[in-house]
Image (spheres, one colour):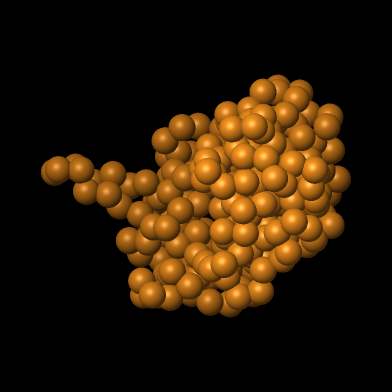
Length: 233
């Protein structure tokens, strides 16, 4: 079985008398260690898909397997454990605790999981060992996003989920963050799933899923993904 598998997943929101099909029969697989990019326009269902995969939201129907476990069958207690131990989240905005230093922000995440990495060593891995004692307000946007990535990686997650992680960054800093995510997938074997509206990002992926109107509109595999440093958008 693939590491991640969606099977006929549907998510319906009731908006008054109107039903909105955020996901309408989505099926796909992602292999362990892949960098998968899920791309599509705003409102296509990308964030709903990511939230269901991360245990933040639940499907209306269908199955989601991750590492052999059916996430769709988890009760709330098991979903909390799943989010704590198996999933690392990186969002567009960094969500750092402003009165904690960089290393303290990373340590915060390691206190809730089973087998974390060393916080300072993880900061060094993302190139911020020398800024470990700085507060978020003393860091640039790109540095804050690297702290957020270090915080997610320090949990030693099975799956790293990234929701528009370059959206709040300038062009060059955004490429650096994409390069870091690509390197994380290649060197550590971490499965990385990144959602974006930017078609250019698909060039760095092993696996590309196109989402439109709550469905998988297309799928591609790159045998030779481009280096993030070469991207232009």
